[in-house]
Image 1 (tube, rainbow, N blue to C red):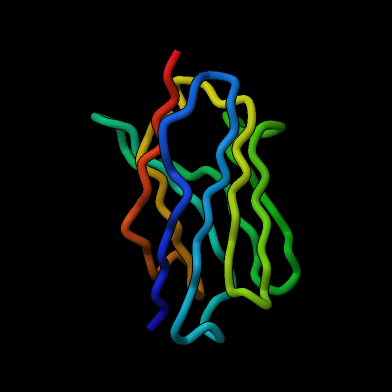
Image 2: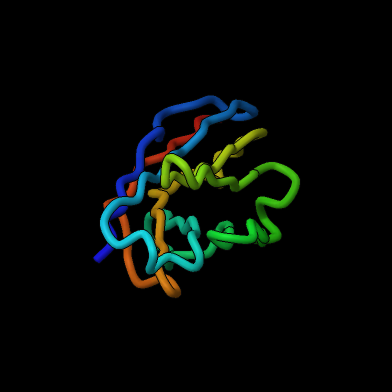
Length: 115
């Protein structure tokens, strides 16, 4: 099993920045990929960004390219999502996921961007 705990959400004005963290514990060896997803009220959960655990290869949703950066610190078993130039449309609950694929999920952290 892998446990994932997100932190760093909050309220920010449009144009501002936030950094989310996702700390992994447990069977870390199971992790091949880590990703961030988000779910806005009334909408389906959507992919935001991913990073491979070993090679550090990254991918982003088109909606966040150039604004968000995913990174990892293997020594701390932590993945980060640096979010810049935030927009009201970025308001959502952000979830960390990982594992061999996206097998394990955190509890989510709320990000609210005011206009």
